[in-house]
Length: 142
Image (cartoon, rainbow, N blue to C red; front, side, top):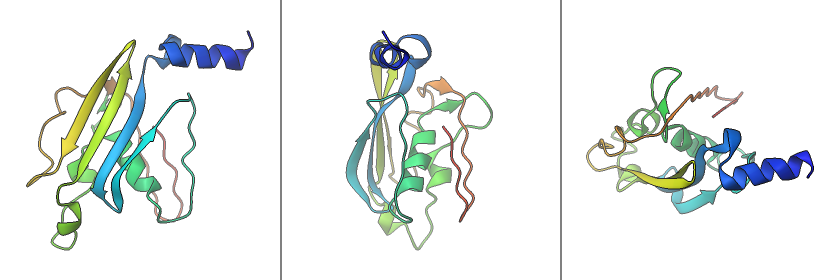
């Protein structure tokens, strides 16, 4: 078996380094996302596209899925702040995740009511996360 086949086998079965990862994210009513879902079926995924299509929105949502072990955790209330100008645009917003933990999966959901609520705060899987957003020169890692 070649190395790439072994990598995909480990990823499909949750072996080795691939025991914890986001299987999918669905974003509703945030910066133009209207219920679209992105699924991750490969160990390495590139998020590419033109400016303004939602790459940053997606990556901000992704980093909120985990309880950060490398420092302060990220929450939608900080990543998608409500101001008087964008409050109507975030009305009914939600972020839904399916996270694989070994051989099982866990569904998590943030839903914005008055604020983003507390639902997954105590249940988020633990992982080192990092997010760097430099407008005009964007580099992001998860």
